[in-house]
Length: 264
Ligand SMILES: Nc1ncnc2c1ncn2[C@@H]1O[C@H](COP(=O)(O)OP(=O)(O)OP(=O)(O)O)[C@@H](O)[C@H]1O
Ligand SMILES: [Mg+2]
Image: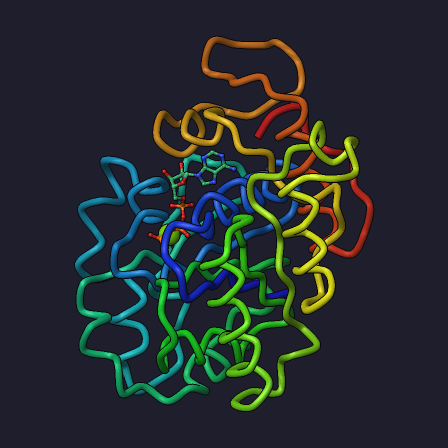
């Protein structure tokens, strides 16, 4: 079981979009995937819950699981409509979990390690014990960054925190969100300058995993469309560049090559 946390101090960098697309890709490729939504703004839960599961969120959510004395995470899992993907949803009661041990998730996850190949943890844009609990349970931590100064500054701050307050600095990667391959070919320009800074100071995920900036992302996360690289049904958004980047990200996270699903 691989645990992957998406985290950034800055909001709106693409954490939830990455979680949804990578989880769906691996689920559609035949892996067993669990998404744990640790952001009380619950965007991932909103995406994955349906009419039936929505009714059960009061009992089945990550705050209830964390607050319980034992480690029975499996009691809080809900099924989704996406092949291979289950979820433990978020809850507003996460606000009461601020004092949680930063080892809490690491205690609980082994109880479901037989059930899943990948666990994706979506976090809120902050640095607190809930986020640290996710880091300490993770094999990989990924921070999406847009090519701008504020994302660079908050990533630098986060790097120092992870280096001094966890033993996960070698498991931490930046992924560029909003990469334009056309500008890259030019070899100069503002995009290249920022990428040079990021490459100088951080460990980045491979270039082919960087998502382009495209309205297709919203079609997937807001309109529940599937992503594909070729035309199929009316519920499918076709975007080969985004499709290739998400498949590359999923493959790089999985550490093995797999046949990319036709759509996910
Ligand atoms: N590659 C992209 N192309 C186009 N839009 C994107 C891309 N990545 C993210 N977005 C959009 O940016 C907004 C923020 O993305 P998202 O919700 O994934 O970020 P987040 O880091 O999870 O935010 P928060 O910190 O609030 O949880 C959303 O409207 C999303 O559709
Ligand atoms: Mg989010």
